[in-house]
Image (cartoon, rainbow, N blue to C red):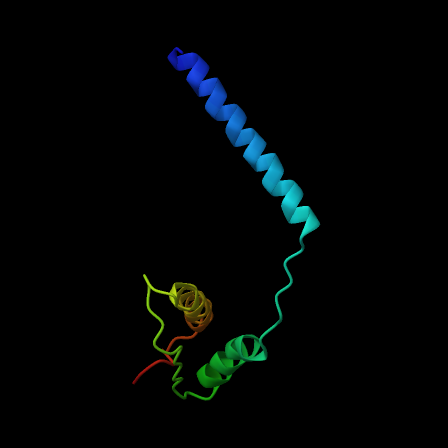
Length: 96
């Protein structure tokens, strides 16, 4: 088997896996429940900036590289969204 044939075979396998994955995702809809706390956080950050108060946020003790990796990633994403929102103000609501 030469290199060109190997590349074509790998591409065909990748295409087949992509099509199979797409078909499975259409069949099984992933439904996530909304968390009111994550929806409320941007409003709380806005109010803290408006009233010149600090904000304390704790996402627990989740760590990367264990069973809690997904929780840590979600916490980091929520913190990034709040930080981007807080960057609009001229003072930091995180600490004084």
